[in-house]
Length: 397
Image (tube, rainbow, N blue to C red; front, side):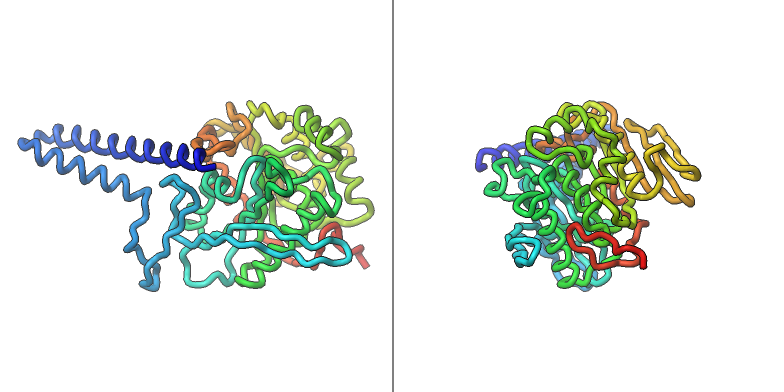
């Protein structure tokens, strides 16, 4: 662990020095362009430019909030780019036992942007993938920096090495001792944080990468009343995997059964209220085959009542746009995007547009964090029901 942190810190310093050098070089060239007669003046200008570049990445201790109080510095990782202006808290949430679930403890990191009050603030739940932690996921996605600009809180539940040696969520095992209990723990954590900080219950969102995306999909099926929208990045299709071996098979080849049939089987006779979703997938992913994203999109269309066993229903508009390095396909109803699929060219199994010095994050492609928040922001869960675990909507009376 120490070696990895040292490596990450050294990489951050190299990048920062590179930024400083480029700034100094640009300032030097600018000074020459105006024919400055004094070399010392040129050097002073270059040094000032380098210092300004460095300050963009390292926060000043003298920075203040809108109320005039000094900001508390918050470091979510060893690299300068991971600094943010708000508050980073680590804690453990104790999930009480009940008739359905045994008690358990889930570690988490909570990021609060520098605002006067959290009352009415949106909350984004970030579920990391295998071989990741709350710190590396916060650092690689840079979601906290976006939270500063857009005014939402972020929580990072963390899988422990005791629960899984690679810190993978057990998304393929719905038993209470595995994925079912993990999903219930996330729901319990969200409820506790919403109550404690008075976050907006109608604007709680969940996003995940790989195994985290699979757990997010399980939450979307089991606890739809808690979340206004979900984001699935490089996630496997839902419903077929039942063990570690079959999970690997789904990741490599997608599901063999009809994706709609798998969703219908999970729902049974229960009514689902719908779950707006964005799916992001690298087209060069060698861990989770891109076919999984196509199948997830079909399953999400089904959850939202926009598709059935025969395909997409009438009245659902589909628009595809080719953007810089990726394709975006929207399925709209009433002029609003309900399911969005983003296929990122040349991206392997990594968070698109992230910090590529952190494993499983890549500078290739658009900024996935920004894409996800752009999709999340207009969605609300208007009528928040009390759903617990696999208790979905009550049957219409």
